[in-house]
Amino acid sequence: MSMTVINIIKGSFLQYARGYAYLITIAITIGIASLIIPAPSAGYTTMSFGSYSGVYNCTYFGLVTAIFASVFLSLVGFFLIAGSIEKDIKSRVGVLIGTSRISNLGFLVFKMLSNFIVLLSMLAVIFFVTISMFFYRSIDQEFVLLEFILPFLFIALPTLFFVSCLAVLLEVVFPKMRRIQYVLFFGIFMLTLLSPQSTQTDLYGISYPEEQLISQISILHPGENISLAVGIMPGKREADKLVALKAISYPLSFIKYRLFWMLFGMFLVVLASLRFHRFDLSLERDTNLVDHEKIFKTSSDFRIESITEGITFAPGIKSLVYAELVMMIRKNKKGLSALILCGMIAMIFVPVSLSHCYLLPTLWFLQMIMWSDLTTKDKNLRTDYLSMTSLKPVKRILFARISAALITALVITLPLIVRYVLVLDFLSCINVILGAVIVVLLSVLLGQLSKTNKLFEVIFFFMVYANLNLVPIADFFGGVHHTALYTLLLFTISILFFGLSYFLMIRYERS
Image 1 (tube, rainbow, N blue to C red):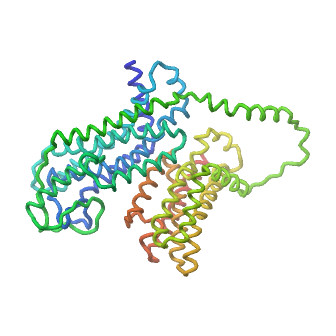
Image 2 (cartoon, rainbow, N blue to C red; image 1 turned 120 degrees about the vertical axis):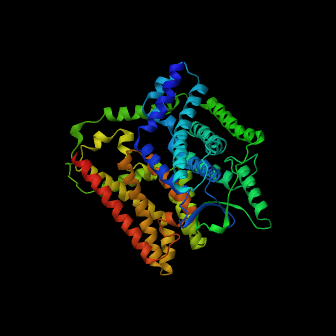
Image 3 (cartoon, rainbow, N blue to C red; image 1 turned 60 degrees about the vertical axis):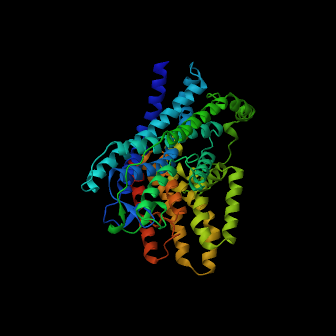
């Protein structure tokens, strides 16, 4: 049994670690970790207390990076680890596991642990990058390793453990419904992050260190309005408003609350085990049995002599675009299609800024699953060998899918485009169209590079979240910027994405 446990955890982890999406995510994590602590002369800050900021000592480094890791990795990491059980179904490994002696609870616990190890490896990357940045950024500051270990241990680690448990629960309760899993997680994430927090109810472990640090600064500067702000904030650090933060203690009561979230996550896994299907898909096969019989009876009556019309050669892609468009529409559930339609109607009546900055990226986010497999669909459905037998398969099929995805993206933006046309704001209209082009081409490019749809889902979710928070650097559809120069930048990015995608497309077709 011990070898079975090790093999399940090891196999699940290697499914992620051997993929390009994981490696690219690690590279992105290294880049973001290096930006969490900006250079003293940088034009932005990541954590401030009113107009005050901290001296670059071990306490500041450890707390800032642990808080960012708790929030950032729980946000991005969920999209990386979601779908681990579905992978076992597609690879047929689940059938072997279902016949083994391992219990449902045991299997889900091991799946959760493998998810946690993936997130833990990313946390370890941030940890070591943070230590490296300390020696690079700080000047004449004593290095205390414990000031790095304790914040990561008590702030970030319990959050990632809970997210690993939540990913298992959502996948068991909503199997093969990744869109619903993503929407529910995003709702839980925003609710727990934005709602008023106390030390007892804070999932991310931010409230207690915030209280301790504000207390330190309030003693040094009484009477001033001091509140914690975390994020990418423009403005340099003022040299006369730097505070040397002292190490904070982690009392037993705080540790108990952090352990509570881990135990609550385990409770969710136990609940999931009661509903786990154990890879028994016999019920699904039974429901489709009648349809298979009808198809068999119909096909058995087929005679090749009954074909009277000649076969015509059609090298165009119109029929392919139509077929891909129909499949994309059918891929959406009726409830989701109704929700998108309601969102499009709302875009007509709400203020145009609200429609552009909030409703539009949200509606695009709901279509993320539909666009994420533009280049990986054949591999996932195991139809790649069949599609490769057609005329110019890569160019024709991929161009058809890109065209169909662009049509769906532009249809969603139609109410907003009409509003801009009526007020003769053609610049914003072009920005919206370029945003749709960038989203689709980004999916194609990342799919070709990583050979999986995970990387696009992770990056696009992060883009949407950043735009909902009006982060200027993440604006890919002109929601924040309204200048001709920025429109030219979006156009350049679109051409760059198309050029790289076309190059990879030609290279793959010739190979």
